[in-house]
Length: 116
Image (cartoon, rainbow, N blue to C red; front, side):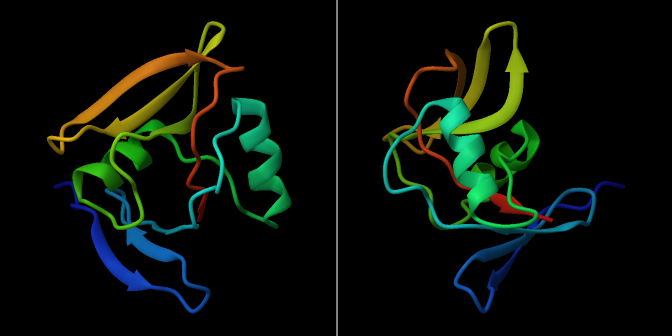
C-alpha cells in the first residue's frame, strides 16, 4: 500500500520537510526570488550546497496536491523532467487547480529546490 505524503513541519533552516509516497523525507527549500530558465535553476540549486536539486515531476505534483506551504498561485515551477527540447513545470491556478505543461528550457519559471 502506498504511503500518502505528509507535512512534517519546518526544519531548523526554515525549509519545509515532507515525506514522499515512498516514505523518503525530502526538504523543500525556499522559492527562488526571480524566475529563471531551466539551466539557471540547475546552477542555482547546485549553488545552494550539496544535495539540493530540482524536484521530480512526482515530488512537485505531490507537494501541490498536499498543499505544501510556500507555493504561490499562478506561478510555474520547474521540475527535473525533460521531454525532447522542453522541460516540465507544474503550478496552481486561481481555483486551486494543479496545472502542468512543458516549456522550452530558455523560458522563465520559478524553482523550489529539494534535498533528500
